[in-house]
Figure (tube, rainbow, N blue to C red):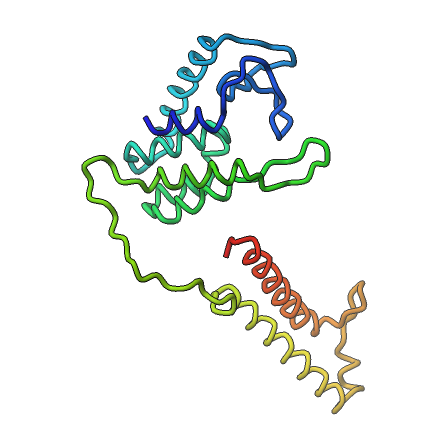
Length: 238
């Protein structure tokens, strides 16, 4: 089974307990339950634990799937669940998209699980090993079964889209523009009738007039969306 080979390759075999990059004591083929510093095992122990864990996770993943998975889809999701735990998988976008019959979204969602918290600093970091593993699992999820016709492969592929063409970026620009226009309109009205405007102002704890709150929020949201999406593009996400 491809998933077993994937798990074995990704986890590696250690007959002595070690601290993983997330600070979890691990032994065998990625076994973590009850592992303590100084623990050792034999390869036979590690193989038995792996087989028991896989049987448990296969049953759990199947039970969570409302849409029957193909062998490759099941294998990919079991590999993910082996790494992130059944509880994590049960709450994952991978499972939700699979159950919605959106295979493309499900395959992309594997990449969302590529971060771990540094045990020393507490900072979330995307790890190359996790990123590579998620990519292999996503590829396995989409891989046709033996005997199935291969997926058509176009040889004319469009260039990556410009950031401004993104619907989310367009929404950010629209929010920014709407907020800016509203602020300009308020400023113009304020010049025409400063006293009437003053009487209508309700100042909150920050000293921001109530009627200016929405335009300011729109400007801030627009800037935040554009900044976030630019960061995503730099990271190869969007």
